[in-house]
Length: 132
Image 1: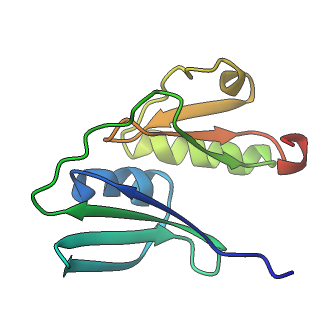
Image 2: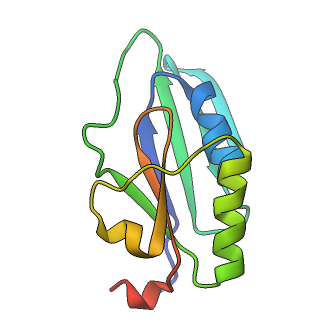
């Protein structure tokens, strides 16, 4: 079975406020964007050739608010310490400081950052196989 492509789609009230976090901090590329598609604006971010990307959309005249809890997470597993340290450093250089994880498990081998909407991303120093 081929590996499916994963799109994480999420509404936001301010796409421009999210871009520094995902583009500059996480190092993702803008893969595409659209404006006024049935009153929706959107942007897709990811790494070219990777089987995942994020889509953030905003419906004009509609408010969605912040994350419902501090435990809404996306976790990136980075098994190599050098890669993990570089990812954490890139987030900090982009102006984002770690936040304590709601679930202390993530603080043992990872660092958690919060985007402008209150959603969190964990950079986890571990291979995926150890996570399951």
